[in-house]
Image (cartoon, rainbow, N blue to C red; front, side):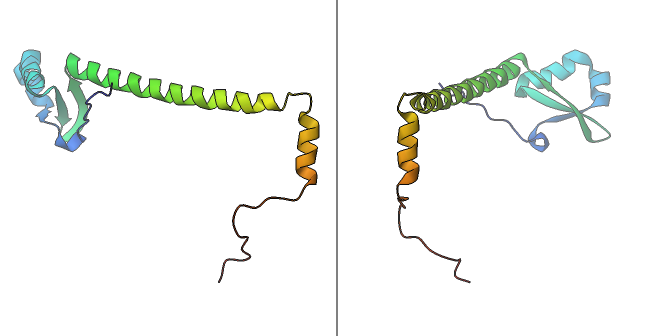
Length: 118
């Protein structure tokens, strides 16, 4: 199941200056985080940190785990295919089949073209 993860650009996130963090305190900042799920803390108008809600952080983690699982599944499929092909080289007649293949004429798929046409 794909997770509906949408990561906003840093410039698109709501911002709060570090001075507001000091002035409003943690509760004030967390009110902003609670409304949007994430807030960029700036210092002299430059981003310094992103504060995420637990729900937002969890959503990102689950999306990353799902992506990693898909990558692992794809790699596992490739590994099985490779192992199957490798196994054919371990057959008793593999050397004879390979020599017969190399001794015969090459089979080209399509029409051979010489040069690049410059």
